[in-house]
Image 1 (cartoon, helix red, strand yellow):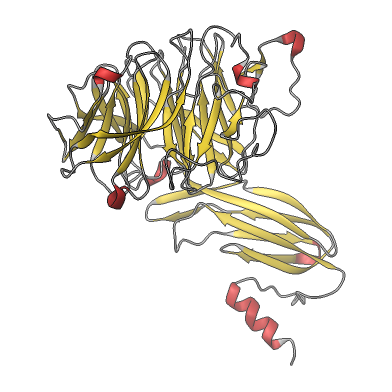
Image 2: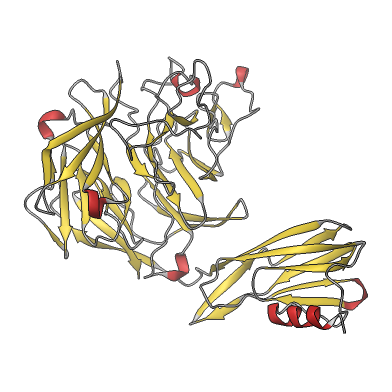
Length: 467
């Protein structure tokens, strides 16, 4: 009779088989299956088979215990829901069970993109050198950054005539300089704070905080407060340009290496310099900021504690996939390769390799040691006119569920649209979409619903939609 509670438990989780193995049997092991990527309420189909006719099927994440030591096969079947097919990756994998141990297995489902086509829908025209787009949390308005120093609002499909913010008199604009991005505080609806990243009249990098005025469509231009200033001497290029709040509520900034070919000062590898880095600070307390105590280099002599990661050349755009807990960095290359780096968003301290590496290739072959470097998950060469990666976002909107989890990016010179998905730490489903090329796409943007946009030098904002 003592086996009845175990039998009832396994029936409740859908993990019973006719062998009636005791989950706590000595000398046995377990397989822990993690199933991800399916919408809520949709069941997967994962079957574990082994010697002696053993077979057990799971429909969701679960742990199968009481397994005799030996080899097993975990096979996942594609499932269909609401007209969409979700493909399992990997479809089959071999697992070795050891007595007294648990073997982890991950099965990631993603909506099949075969047969899906996309197009660009124009949502605004008449902008001047738009370089970024963002929305406050829960706010349907689109805030578009113009390089010369203005922030414009698209509300209910119309571009408002009055700028949200105009600091053109304070901005050095042209080439890679200008007003480059905007970030809204996670509590913007209650505190009204937003942050901008720009190059001042001396060419130095400044991140400042502003406050919205009594009118929700106009900022208080007198409310500026300096968060951080970074000297950017000598060269006008490689300013980085993105300020963004991470899922942890910290403020992140991507800075360029200071310009010129090959990073002559070695800023990318110099951890006592703020150029060529991804920075992470806490702006939720007293001005200007505090350094989070869990930053990777806090307390180290001769190292700036604001640094989250280093070895970057010009991380013009980066993005967080909050659902998968990943950080994507699109780092602009020198003269040969462009790259995308993907790591856990919770782990800092990575060295992305510049100026030792350019993408996956040695930039300095005679002194090229890859020990301790984090190499890109994908890179591409400057063939067919490519020149500079325009990093984007992972799609987490609802209008096109088939492309959920896909990271989209482009190239400033080639203007194509590409995407890929990260599954279990590996690139899957790389694709170049059959859409008209864009004339110099400057940036991607994401609205509060997770839909994606592209800003283009011709003064337009385009939304990615189903064709």
